[in-house]
Length: 138
Length: 381
Image 1 (cartoon, rainbow over the protein chains, first blue to last red):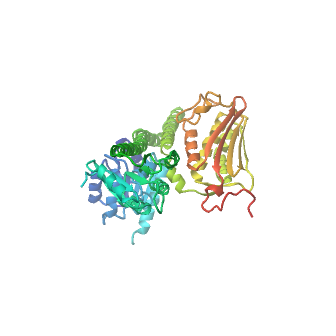
Image 2: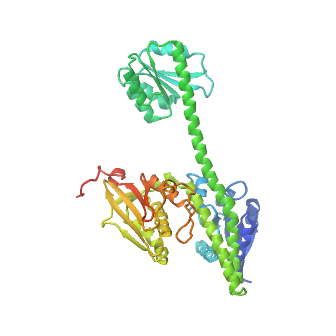
Image 3: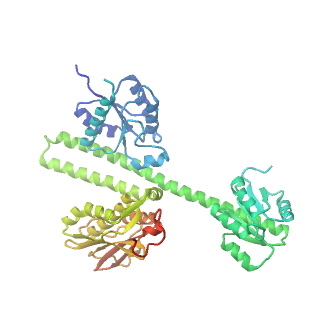
């Protein structure tokens, strides 16, 4: 049995999630969803994922940013590629003045602005998975 | 000693007897006081003591009171200063006020006069600080508004658009041509709304500091060319002759290329939008008296005198373009802010029936550049 690529989406907007999940499922990925950072973190600890798609503005503010920082500090998760999908590219910089947001938010991150065109989403996910595979020791 | 938050007063005078009596007069009042016996010692206290008010004698050996005033203003223009002078001439008082003193006190003065003037100065300082705090709050609110707009309005639109894309893919092989066309129109309209939200948000968050921090020497031909290229399809569709008139070599400016290009795209785009089919839009650049002047002239209907004062107001959009197009009402407001962030200006001249000319004027390099040796009037070697 070939192992399918496991993706996790953490985003608190179920309608938005259904839009990207359909695209990813249609391309043959196994996609799980968490609707808040807490469930998302629990999911990350419970199962091995190949890539995380992370929303920034969740809950009472930019909880996605805290989430990304937490991942970076976690030895088991620090190499997990994170695709940040946000509706607020410029505001991220405003909310965190003087802090590096991108690149180097987490070491292997990418950032796309909502909404994401299906082809662009698939291309970016594939590229990040490929880059992660080449980083892994054989 | 004194309550935290008490008004902090620095008294500078070379006569210790004056200092002592000033301190004595203010004892019992809610002030924290430090003294200095000459100008340079007083200035040293600016950082150490961080005074709200400075009371300074005009005539002192060493640094004069006027020089001290000047340095205080350079260090922190919100500090309120009062000068004391033994020569109660109107001239010296006026001179001191011109250099930023809030009030003056002719020697000799009575304790009541001194108390009154200090109290008024303290009130002035409180007002100055309050104004600053309000201004900061206003800026913050503006930024927060932008953040709210982007999240609360953009998120649902993004969710709709994301799902429309999926639907288009999923239905591509089963929907009729009619249905596909309908879906496409919906997607385009939602896309337009998303773009509109982005433009609005941009209008309130053009970050002047970011622009200034990222300037470089740029030949004006570069942003002009980029802007013209990005609009050439638009112009071609309306058979509008979009031409440039830029000398070679082009004048250089100290600019943030991306935002300057954005401003030009807004202005040239407007010109194309409001010019009837078959018209002409000319983008020219020239050096005029050390300043670089970029002019966008069109053969459109022109702008009526009643509209002219408002074209740069945010959310102002006059009627419609030649093909019924309507702008977001922010393009010119954003462009003007961009021009101003570059130390320049955006102005317009227009004659109804004969067209409009929008002009961005930017400082020439010698005035604003990082290493300009002076004004570059003549031909450089």
